[in-house]
Each structure stands twice: as C-alpha cells, then as structure tokens.
Image 1 (cartoon, rainbow, N blue to C red):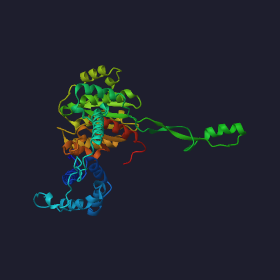
Image 2 (cartoon, rainbow, N blue to C red; image 1 turned 180 degrees about the horizontal axis):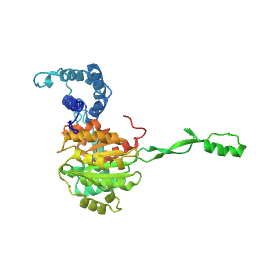
Image 3 (cartoon, one colour; image 1 turned 90 degrees about the vertical axis):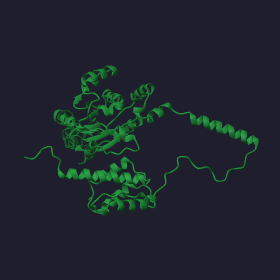
Image 4 (cartoon, rainbow, N blue to C red; image 1 turned 180 degrees about the vertical axis):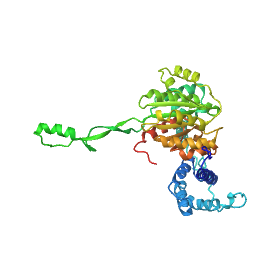
Amino acid sequence: MPNPNAVPDHLKKESTILYNLLLFGRLLRELGMDVNPGRMMDLIHALEFINIGIRTDFYHASRGLLVHNKGDIPLFDQAFDLFWQKPMEEWFTINLETLIHKKKPRPLIAPPPLNLPEEPPPSEQQQGSDDLQTLLEVTVTYSQREKLRQKDFSELTGEELEAVKKLMENLSLQLGDRLSRRRRPGKRERLDLRRSMRKSFKHGGEILHWARLDRKTKPRPIVVIADISGSMERYTRLLLHFIYGLAQDRLHPVEAFVFSTRLTRITRQLNNREIETALRQVSKTVHDWAGGTRIGESLKTFNFDWGRRVLGRGAVVMVISDGWDRGDIDLLAMEMDRLQRSCYRTIWLNPLLGAPEYEPLTRGIQAALPYVDDFLPVHNLASLEDLAQHLESIGGRKSF
C-alpha cells in the first residue's frame, strides 16, 4: 500500500534544482554582483513558466532577472557556463580567479582628490572652519524614529522596545477588497430589469433608462500563523504586539494562531481591549512556549481543524517563522501545498531575511518556498511598513 505522506518524485527534483539555484546565487555574490534573495525568488517563480531543460530559455531568464548592470553580463556568462555544466562523476571546486572580469567592491568612502587646493587665506580658513562645524552639527543630528525604524527587533534595548511598541500602534494594514456575490445599484455590469421596469412606470411604461447592478466589495480576512519556538524568541514579543494591532484594527476580520510543537488559536484572547491583559491570557493559553518547532504538524492541524472555518471569503494567510523545523519535512511540503490551494494568497514572513548574508538553506524553508506567493522580511519597523504597502496592492482574482 503506498505511503500517503510520501513526497512525489517531481517535488524531490524541484528541491534539488532549488538548492543548485541557491549555490549559483552565492557564486554570483562572491563575484561581486548585486544578487539578493528577492531576485533569487523571482527566478524561482519564473521557472514555472519556462522549460529548464532548454538551456537557452533558462539562460535568458536567469540573466534577465539576476543581471541589472550591463557591465556584469560578461561575468555572468562565464559563471553560468562554468556552473551549469553537465553532471560530472565527482565533485570539483570552482576557482574564482579564473573569472577574469571579477568586479572589485565599491569603496564605502570616496577617495581624496588627486590635486589638493592651495592653502586659503586666513579669512577664508576661518569661514571654512565655520562651514565644517555647521556640517558636523548637521551630521551628528538624526531622527530617533528613523533609527528605530531600521534597527533589528532582536537588538532593541528596553527603552527602544517600548518606543517601537508605541510606533506600532499607528501602523495600519489595509488589504485590497474582494468581490462579493451580492450586487448593488451601479453603472457598469449587469442589467437590473426589475428596477428598470419600476422606473418606467413614471413615464407611462416606456423605458428611458436601463438600470444596472455592480458587485459589492468586502474586506478580505487575514489569518496569521506565528512561530513562537525557541529560535523565534528574540522576535516573539514584538510580533505578538503586531498581531494584537491587526486584531484591534477592525478593518478586516483577523484570525490568529501560534505554534511551536502544536497549534493554538489565540483570536479570542487578543480581542481584549487592554494589550497587557490580552498577552497575559495568551501566555496562559499557550503551553509550548519557546519549545521545539514542528511546522508541518502544526499546519496539518490548521488545515484539517480550522481551514474550512477561516480560509473562506478570499483569506490572506501570513506565516511568521524562520523556517527551522524539527518535524517531518515531507509533511511540511504537503501541508503548505494544501494551504496555498485553500487560501487567496500565502505570505511567509521571515525575520532572518532582513540580513544581507541570509540564504534560505534550511530544510523547512526549502520545502515551503515552492508554495509561497510572497517571501518577505519582518525584522524591523521599516519591514512592517513595507508589508503594509504590499498588502494594499493585493486585489483581483487569484491566479493559479
């Protein structure tokens, strides 16, 4: 009897291709090219529309999405030919010195001018020193809010943590509305024969104007599934404040869940008007705080116990996790596939994605990424503001 939890062969093949793509992106970064995780995600999504077995199609798709400087094309061509060779019998190491067009990193400080100006008169020296003093005073001044926007949540002090919490209170997330089955008087879509006939009675039964109906719009539901395991402990406190703000906004229906080794629904606890009381109730409800991580089993519980209740009406699901998983990776891939097919859009928020050197190499992330519509960072206040702008652009019909 076949194993129902076994992963199909084509999924295993996709994981191998994904791993090789990540290695190729690392090679390009070592060569000095500006290749970030976002561009690698664009290339992974583009593979759905091209045949990777046709080398020319794969080459042009990779070059178009990864190369954004004309001068990098020769370097990319050499790296592509060297990396994507036919399989060899044994491993070999790529010597970066063979790529003669390797770029030098751009200096962080501009070099001094070659021709220094002659020493100015004493009066001009005094004026220059005043200008320099003014420049220094302007340089050392900064916006405390801007500093907090860019600082990683895991590096905040106690005072900064309280300041960020207050800034989060002003953060509002507005999703694009969904089309309802109900209709209202409008000007574009379906003819409203009943209203047209009623209006015609005022003109002796003659229809002078055709009334029309348009579809109503309703706010999309939001479903948040947050990781509270030990590896996410540095971000858990602020992310719970973020989820609480979503639940209190009242612009969209919000369902909230947390998981470590098992899934717990916290929607009712977050409905309290006092945030400290709400968080205390959450801490009493959740019994696996800062434990291990079993993403696949938690998502299976969500899909089978809560999916039909909360994923209707075009819900957008936000999974907040760093992707470290101690459970069954095959189960994680299967449940992410089921989750993506059941909701309108799947957004994975990873606090580690904000680091420039981050690469999605963990088994959990590699298993989940093929079924993620948006892979975004959530490590500081600026990333939450970017998330708000991204959610405002979501709308229309789901594309499969």
